Length: 149
Picture (cartoon, rainbow, N blue to C red):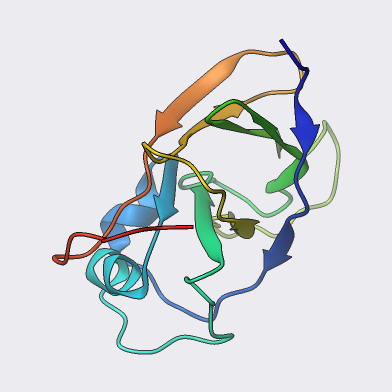
């Protein structure tokens, strides 16, 4: 059995404002098409545009944080069989660190190339220690995809 191989991924800064409910808790989502993104975020447009023919869009929300200084770091995206594993960490400010005294809602958006897989791959989210945080399948809008490559 071959080991995992690293996928090329790209972190993007989408200019969309999610519903307040999406900001309050830690969430992991994978979008397979534009319609599912718009249904989830209530957005009618966003920048930059995402090529969903070639990419999945992974969204990670850290949840509501009491101050600034929090964040999300993506370490790697690995493929093994039909599992795409996202290795990430959550940053919290250290003791005595100067931070903004305002609630924040850190989030990260990552483009991951679509793979030729039937059934679709499952995405798992792990800390660098190996601890599994979540597992998600790609979301699609109301139309069933004929073929995702």
